[in-house]
Image (cartoon, rainbow, N blue to C red; front, top):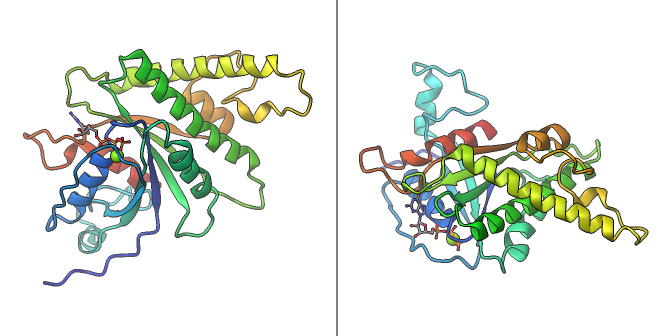
Length: 274
Ligand code: GTP
Ligand code: MG
């Protein structure tokens, strides 16, 4: 049979988040959705290395450039023949591997200017059933805090001549199929409150250390540096220009629904970045 030549995949998304949140499961699902003929069954187990996969956006998912397209639009047919492709980099979430893998990838990809390596967005996966556990919440929030701090530093260091585009963050509130899962709204509140605690204790630490001259505090605190107000993703967008969306979903299929439909709203978020 003939397969239409796919457009070269040049839009990169980085998949971050703690161990067990479902990053590899998502990567595998997106691959299976992209090529239904070769349903790969990756074994999900704790990842130790990063992998880059090329996947395609379902033709019915709108992109930023065709969001007003109607179902009768001939470009929909074209999209069916020649789907938009993008790349997802799955990273290991284990605490010991974050600095050398996820954060390091974020640091290098977020400043890349060539189309092949440029980063379009960050998908930060969260296990919403595990978040009721205080230790998991703390661990998840501290990883997200570090991710947002990298992006904030990037914004602050951005010189007007360089013209780096924005990198939005999707907090993929995964495992909504489980009845113990927290709804996305409360995931957002919990993460904001925990990040607020983290940045307040960091600010205090920096103040205590401020006897040390030459220590540049400003860059190391997320959001406004007085840390008086309460942290929120909204505040981060206003003050640092970083957009964070928390969207619920599930990699695990609801048998009553279409294959892979639990990730539809994340694909829509991806579409709006393209
Ligand atoms: P690391 O590689 O260690 O960073 O973890 P990971 O984020 O890649 O997690 P992985 O994809 O291996 O998923 C961990 C477990 O969660 C697996 O047993 C998955 O089957 C399960 N899982 C992933 N997504 C869902 C979901 O939406 N619902 C349910 N119930 N389980 C899920
Ligand atoms: Mg994994």
